[in-house]
Length: 210
Image (cartoon, rainbow, N blue to C red; front, side, top):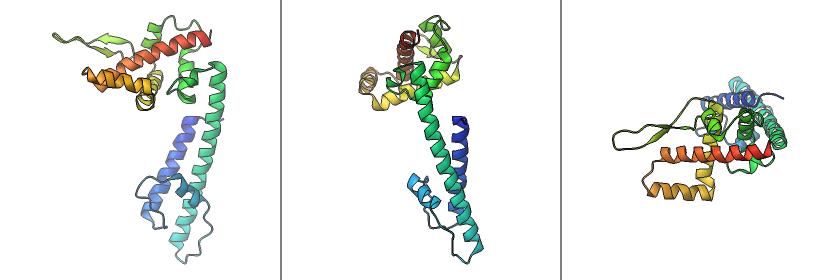
């Protein structure tokens, strides 16, 4: 199975090339904004052009080729996503039911955790994920910042979970509202949520991957 990141990179490259082509040649498609999936589907279904202008004929053929490639990569990514979801569910049942945890973030977390006993404590897991607090006080102000060392992929997974929760999970949104009311910044709120997410996921992994 092809790498998900490689497929996504290739799809993005083809989408960018198609957008540039449509902006540079008038083929009847409004490409001033990002191309919609419906537009790509329509281009992929184009028939051979009857235009007498060779530039238009070549441009339409190339646009169709790029659209078909984008559609193919999208299909491969969907299969990849489904397979990854099934595999992560087998390795860590129920992990993907956590708000904000999808197949990709779950896979990153599982790879970082590896197996029961590798990470000796929740604090060690937090340090690995770059969410362990480090004192950063100044004068009469007592604050902490995150220790950024560790697994960047795991830290990014925690960040995705937190940002998703802040947008769509009601308990998380309520926490954000209460924290803002006390004067906390968004950065402080995300830092606290990352630490909470790390703690909750570690405890969950300790149970489901024992």
